[in-house]
Image 1: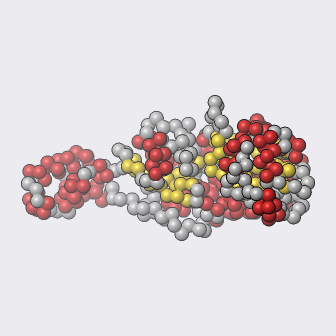
Image 2 (image 1 turned 60 degrees about the vertical axis):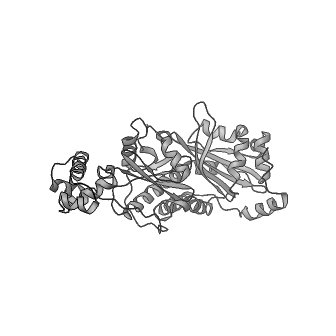
Image 3 (image 1 turned 135 degrees about the horizontal axis):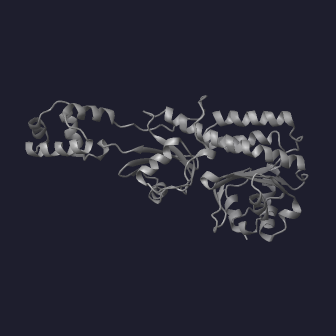
Length: 375
C-alpha cells in the first residue's frame, strides 16, 4: 500500500479544492477544431520541456477534467508495465511512484492496453474494484477516469493519457470518451512534432549542421530522432536495434558525461527531465594523437621537418615518422591533400541548447514516432 509518502488528510483536502475546476460544456465540433489548432500551434512554439503541460492547459479550457497523467510506457512480452517520461498534471510529482506500487491491480491500465486506440471510461465502481487502485484513487479524491493508449510499434513504446474527475463531478459521458479517443492521436503527433522541431532549432543554433540529434529519457529510452541518428549509432554499434541506447551510452547518460568511441562521439544536454543527444562521427583527424595533430597543423601550414623538430624538441627522424603515421591515418599522400583534409574536418563546434524558450516557424522534420527505423 502506498501510504508512506501520501499527503495527510488536511493537505489532501486542500489539494483537491485547488485542482477541482468548474464544469464546462462538452466539446463540440467547433471547439474540437480550435483545440487541434492550439495543439499544433504549441507544437511549433512551446519549449520542449513545457509542451505537455501547456497542451493539457489548452485542452482543459474546453474539456472538463480536474487532473491528468500523460506519458510514455513500455511492456516487454514477459515483463511488467514500466512508465518512462511522464507528466502528472495537477497531481504531485510523486504520483507515478505511488502508481508503481499498485500497478498490478490497475484494471484500468489493463483495459486500455487490451484495446489500443480505444478510450476506456471508468467510473467509481470500476476504479474502486481492486484494493490497490481504490486506495490510490481515494487518496486523490478521483471518482472518474478516461484512459487511452496509442501504440508506437517502431519504438516498442506506447503513449498513454488518463484524465481524472474528482468527487462531486459527474461521470464522463460517452461523448467525452469518443472525443478523447479522437483527440489522443493528435496529442501524440503534436508531442512528436514539438520534439522534432526542438531538434531542428538546436541544429540551427549549432556551428554546423553535422550533428545527429535525438531525445531520450533518463533510462536511455529513445523517443524521437532525426534520420541520421540511427545510422550514426550503428557506426559504433553495428548490431544496435533500439529503442534503448547501447549500454555504454546509458552508463555515460547516468553519469552525465560525454562519450567518445572509435567512430562516434556523443554529448548529452539536459532539457527538463529528458536529455538531448548530440552525436557526431569521429573524423580521421579526431584519431590523431595530440602530438600528431600538432605536427600535422604545422606541416600543412608550411613548416619543414627541421623547423617542426626544433620547435617541438624532437629529432627530424621522429618528425618524419609522425608524418608517415599522419598520412596513413588521414589517407593522404602529400602536403596539399593534408591541408585540405584538416580544413574539411575541423571541429563542428558545440550546439546551443540555451535561449530556446520560443520556437521560430521551422519546416517539419522528416521523422517522428511513426517512422523511426530502429527495428
